[in-house]
Length: 248
Image (cartoon, rainbow, N blue to C red):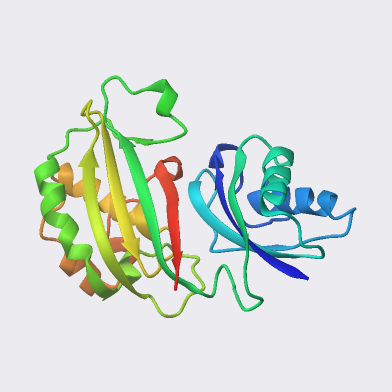
């Protein structure tokens, strides 16, 4: 068996998330169907760098799978890319060592979150940015962002339903940019890993700060409380993108 690593992108709008489920269309299921077809009907299982929820997008999700034959890389990429549905793209394929694992060897992930703040809202962004129609003081958000940096127990920013016991994570980057038109915010978060819905809760909390309903210096106290109820609401999934997964 040859182990392949692939970087894929997908529009999460019509998926119930990345991971295979009994009900609902998933990215894993669609790619596995294509690989099985390419393998003359013999099932192939893929492993992803992590899950993404329903509606969440990816520009740089990483998967690995074992395939019985060694194929020219562009032929393998092209076959996967053209035979998967149009909301999935296969950006690159490489052969890796048998010890490579898309999930267990991740050292860092980068996510972006897009917020449409235009008035009126853009109908063309409705699946690709979370809409926020209320007033925002962007200076307050900029002041709050650095408080996420470093190693913390992020229990307050983890949704219920997580099966992870250790909620300590290290955040290396937490930044916000505004597009040239001034009607979209782009948050970037880079760290060694993120908890269930953590980025969406961070963004929901930052928007609450920008709206004046939380103080700009409230993040350290929210982290210290280790209580989900202390943080802001969970932002909608359509604004979230998995941008990059890094390995050693």
